[in-house]
Amino acid sequence: KILASPDKEYDMTEQQKATILANKGLCLDQLGRAEDAVAVLEEALALKEDPGIAEVRDQIAVSILTDKAVRTAERGQYEEAAELFTECIEKDPDGQNFWL
Image 1 (cartoon, one colour):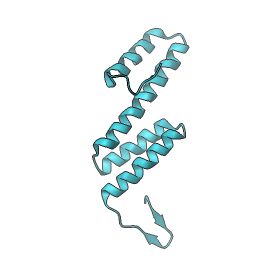
Image 2 (cartoon, rainbow, N blue to C red):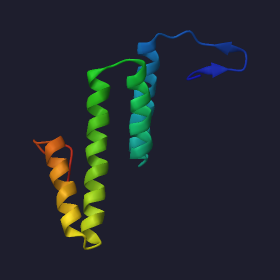
Image 3 (tube, rainbow, N blue to C red):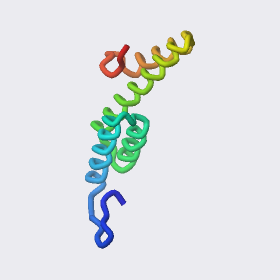
């Protein structure tokens, strides 16, 4: 249960549960646990499809992909890194969610 105490369960709507999970995902991202954040945001979207939650999930996913591309380039695997950067650009053509 998302919110529960030993003696009481809370009756919440799917939207409320999704909002709580989305907030948890944002907190995990701020803690540097981006992959966990994406998983929690996926859980929120399974409860209630919400464009705002989907956008946050996508932003974090692009950030994860960017980090992977940078680490790949640092290891000298430039061709694979170029493919990952291309994927970043395809997912975020305006470049608002990836960094170099």
